[in-house]
Length: 252
Image (cartoon, rainbow, N blue to C red; front, side, top):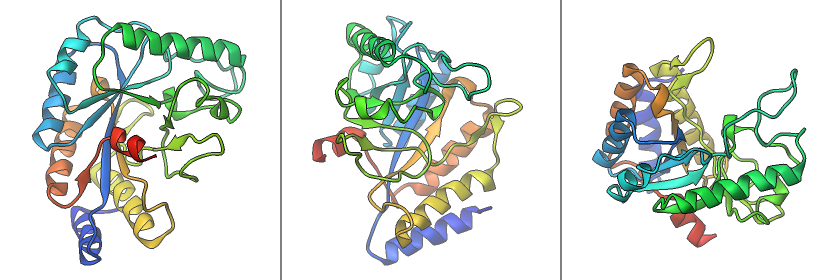
């Protein structure tokens, strides 16, 4: 487990090497404007941290585009189609898993992207975020043909780009624990995810160029997670570089 002092010490090591680590912020399961979404947008804006909303396309609220248009630091990514499990009992939940026909998956994802376009969402980036961070290995090679430039799951990436040219940009720090219910994982456990990834980047155990990703879920965020995210962003202020995935896609 890690403490705030451990985070400071790791950031000091980066600074002593003349470097600032890159970070990015992803929030999952967005469909409509809510008070929690407004709170999230305000929080990220306060720290000049670009926010990437993983949006479930099936039933986008028409009012969402207006809220996002007033928030130029917010980007829209595609979070599956309906966030619906298509795996049989006995397999872990996935909307784009190993069991469903690829043609049906393609049809859903293309329809989802069309709905995001029709909704008039600003700052759309061709990044696919699989629900539950799970995607079948046989699906990944097709994503570039379906129009995506990047894939975002969770945990350190094993490759920058795969043979299809798809860029991998994952999340690494998640303050929520999901079982038995959604609650704060705790300061030390969450900081350990962050410090661990930064240390692995610095020492070469992980890809140094992969930005460390914070993953939140505004609809399931209790007060102590909001407080942690506020303190976390404040601690990082001036010591890291918050980036957009759009900037990485332009370089790719």
